[in-house]
Image (cartoon, rainbow, N blue to C red; front, side):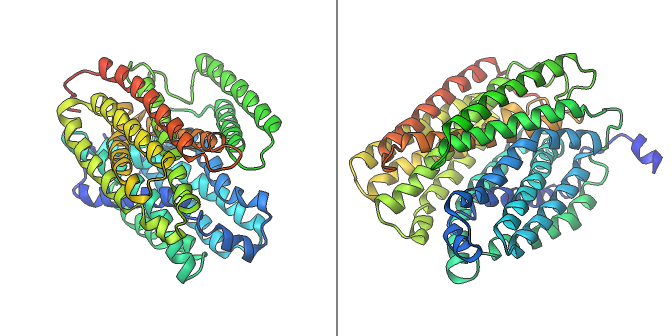
Length: 464
């Protein structure tokens, strides 16, 4: 056993396609559970006796735990190996899914959802970190990131459709039980396929004080954003949490400069590209999440679609996003991720403006289609490009924490998008055109940051 840890880690696997499929299936579960319960919430409320204000925490608790523990999850992966962290996180996620499906009281479901978010925070950085280590050749890595991005977008869309079908024809409990066979498959196969890919680095001591500061700071920030964006929230409490979160994050920054064992490894932000790519990812994720949510509300509350019809109305979105993923994959190899990200953010903004115009003029579903397709293509190309630019030059010691930062930027962007949605829809809740215009503004800001990434990024990607 001792000799194994001394060996140089393998950087290849004999079954890369199988590894990619398992990693992306697991990623699919994480994105499904971001919103798969949304359509099932009224049924859950009736069966478990949730009050109106507490019902939202079935969704928010998952996001809170997921976003708060992501960086710690990535750091644990770097120290104890990404494969072990993936296995532990998947086991926790599966157990929490089982407990969620068996819940008989509101507190049981909310507690299980928090545990699910913790498991997801361990798994998500490991998935992206392992992709970075296994696929090192530029074309292969671009394809792997494209498939990962397509999985994330598809999972968000499938969550709506699947939730509607399961709730209408089966039981809401199967929204959670469907996670179990995929988790079992991943736990059995992946550790065997990736044995020796990433060894633990026992010399990297964990800075638990820094971990506590960052986790609490991120969790409070996500809570504040969710509270600002939710119905019936308390602005004073949300503002106090936002101020406290900023104080904790500032203390974390000071701790990182002074610590001999920083949570975010020294040199992670040395790249002139990475920090800017992460900011662009936050803004693009905010635009994506907001556009997605506002469009869902408009289809049901503005156009009168049933939940199932609204889910099926996203089929063109899925087709557009997959088109964007494929086009972005090819363009990234030729033009670099930063340039693809810039064009993708511009396309996302243009699509949001078209959607805003169509919603304001009440053109109906047919009038939304051009905006839906353009928005979806931009998102499909942009999210993998942002991840690829941020993960540039990641190595065995930093891949986990860099992957966690990429996932954190997306979770934080989602919380920002939810807050913007609640604020921009107005008191009536029907300001769909204005909300989509705000979405376009977020995408334009992302485009500006992406342009800086493109200017700083070398034109020819390194081979490893």
